[in-house]
Length: 450
Image (tube, rainbow, N blue to C red; front, side):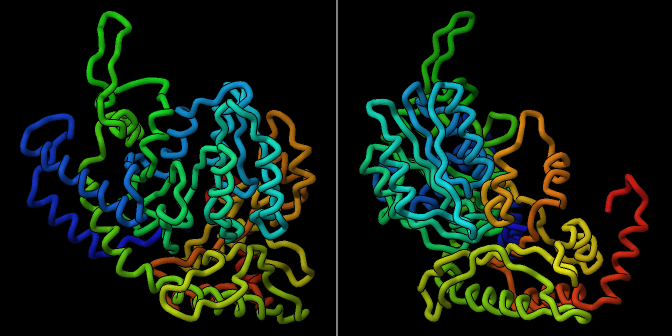
């Protein structure tokens, strides 16, 4: 589902910590509040250490990676003459920043997808050169790893963008869970991560790892408790807090207020947990991904001998063979199921069968419309969309359900998990079994949730 399964040990350790300690709002100097502040500082230092951040970086805790990206969008000093450059194969949270950019007069420019996602490096460099206009500040957002096409972007493009004068933003939500990321090697201005994607627990907390010098350029369009030192009421005067990260950290919860202080100690423990496994993950996941993809590709329909699935996402060009070696793609497989005649089987039917087998799959465009359009070959239809169009309208135009079936492998994935997915996919190769599930799916009353 794109999120790591939570380790039992993390929940147990955190539960014991909460049962033995009383934590308070960090906006105070009581003993319980001081303990929360210590946990926050430890978590902040753990994040900086995990990502090998050099001096000059700080951490702003947010509700998730989306919250971190939104913080940049609403605070970045876009103006007329600015450019916002991003990849078409990006999450909607990255696309959403264009709303802030265009409202302030900035131009938005997309780096196009290849048919398997990602982009051509020389095309990206050309667009960055073409749309850099001084002195207006401009932002380049890079998706480190696509959540649908499985493509890893070359992080060297961030260094190139910096040399042209762009500020750089790295969406590492899909990259960080299984790949080593070093801010010493790739010193971006800001990077967004979500901890539940990395080690499963806790949810509801992410981070923006950011240069302090870049943070000084940002200005939130509002203030709240914890972000200010003095507020004049009645009146209009306001003095923000002296600590840079505290000026932005009130956005950590959906309700905007106190830091999510009960979970910060779990972030520190989670990073320790992942640090122990991360060197081994690429090797193990490379083996599992290769076995999954090759096994699925060999499946054939009983009656016609035609393929059961079509893998659309990018597959690794080579297998990882040693501990510490990094994979050139992620470990996500996006595909569609095919009927014996070669037509796409509806994803809603695939989900129906998966539910009966107690398997959790993600289907649809997985919040990445650009990547999905490239994989499905519907970019021309995407260009014809009109204001007010709905997903149902779009599907009527294309003539089928839109999206893919996504299988995500990660920290907790075992060979048994992969074998169950292969066994599940084999159901679609068996005409009698597939027809039986189809009949039960068609009998679901209209309006009833499947």
